[in-house]
Image 1: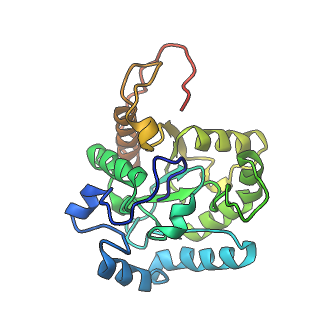
Image 2: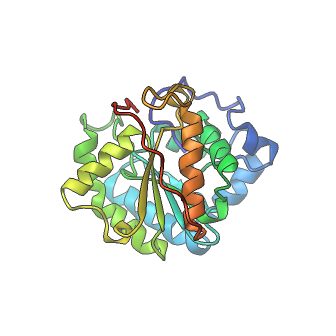
Length: 253
């Protein structure tokens, strides 16, 4: 999973995702080459293969940087869809997969949060509202609002191939929430997600994750865990109490 904000240059030999590394789950060409090569060769197999063959077509028709779906994710169905606004250069230069197992700081924070929340990898899929890198310097300057509208039909295609629609959608970070609001205002939210519960969570980027929320005073990392825990429980059919009302104010993330 790529970083959407620059939290430092990518250092491929540095272990960012320690939890994945400790559990021998890391996706890294440099640090786990045999595991990466194994799953890279199988990225077109099974249910994830339908999505990744679609990614190939999307790359060919748009000439955009689009990472692949994690071939190990959502083995029991994508009941929870975690959406960032967009990937970044790391999606292409890193492991090439959108995954909690990728070796970057965003994926590391998201994996730890999901683990604390009890959100299983087997029911979760990670993706982006805009599947390509908006700030790609080989293109003219582009804005999120315009690109999310352009990408809306692609999101519908992705969901058509996914199978049963997700029950839960978690928007990670202010850019994803902004992009979703654009789709909602324009009536472009894919029909497959109209009955899903949509939650908003802080971005797992370290620049946000480790700060305090100015409204609630809680650490953003803890807020992320709480949102993921509620989504996991609802996806299992459990009753989740409504969130406690917070004070008024504007969250910058």
